[in-house]
Image 1 (cartoon, one colour):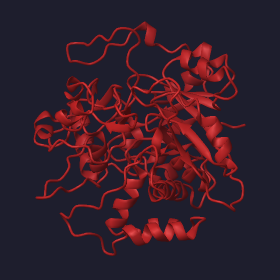
Image 2 (cartoon, rainbow, N blue to C red):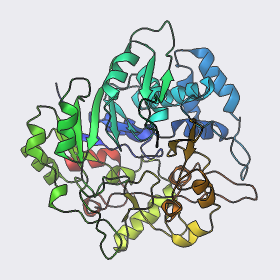
Image 3 (cartoon, one colour):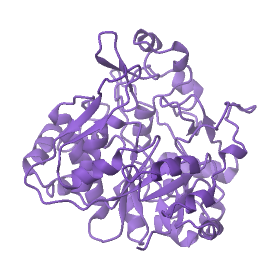
Length: 462
């Protein structure tokens, strides 16, 4: 088995879209699309008129034509919605989603992977957050229908995913356990999916678990039922979410978490498991690839360098500002322990006019209307409710959440959607501000400059 030397990190929402993943896969390395919020991204692309016709071209290849036609009829707006017009909402996924909501998620993941794989045989993967469990079965199934080669999953332990992949490859019904805050012993909470009937078996993708310690890798590898096909070992300087420090949380003078010797990954212990692994977080340079291989790794995963390249879906204006700021030496990237509703530290770039700017966010109407990072919780009557620290504080407290958890919490869903040009417009013309996340090491720009392609990144690394 030949493993890729470079994995292009999966960056949501939509930053690592199909164009970027395809560009990387064309070099023979692993291109990865982000699988987060693809249903909303698909709906908004269709409402914007589907420039270039790419979405409609992919929909024409969906194996159940009636389902694809229903999505197109429901959401496509020829010529695009008028500027300043609010976009149609996407149904929120819950433990018992409507069939339409699940089918929309299946179709959206199919479209993204299909376009990334179109016209070549390079490897393509999709990245998910274990935290977003209610979307997982439908998302993974859609990606598999398009022939995805790898599934990567972080922000939690993907203990159930090997079995899920096995079942979906045979189009078998699946039930994925869902963590519900406050659930009583013996209560069964899950999300179910009945795949389409009459389709041929699907290739089973390889599963790479994104973890931050050898302990977690050993835990997953101990049992065939939970064992992935490999690991991505991610350090705290990687972009997006990262694991909190082990032990008591200590913050430095800037309010960022302090990592110490206990947070170093024991590479020898991971290598002893006999599964391939890749190093991630501050790995963008040929010297890092060389040292990773010397430690027994198959290669490295790189995100930020690809986020700033031409094929990235990050808004071009924001990209130019980031590159100019980095060139001037005043680019700030914070590891914020309060920003993400998940509770994981999250990297933010506090550019003026973005959601990570305190002034800009203070002016934002506080709401949670996309809901991907909502936490399911047990209600007093035994039912399941959903809450998010990014929603209004009084509403969050009314649902049993601690009011202090809302302080500093940002709406990642809306902010990240705006970062790729699909932010919602509110009544009265208010537009959602973007929210930018990057890794904390941008030293690679000294070699790559401020105008480079995904293929240039691969050449630099190799």
